[in-house]
Length: 88
Image (cartoon, rainbow, N blue to C red; front, side, top):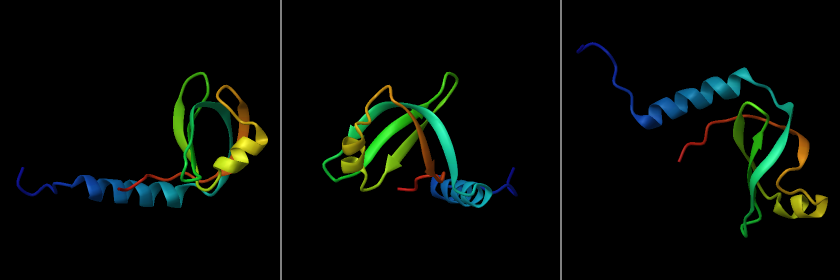
């Protein structure tokens, strides 16, 4: 179909990021930490999951705070943040 737009991966990611960031204000979320990585850059990366789903999470500059709070895999937490799509 010659009149249909062919999207690049970057265009789709940018459109999704715009839609998601404009649809959700910062919010509280509850879940269990899994796959926690406290990176030497000072950032913390993990999955936040419940019994049906999971999402990736990042706490930029938060590795020290995660250590200080004793957060580790299996911990049930409530976190405040926003949702986005990461564009490389």
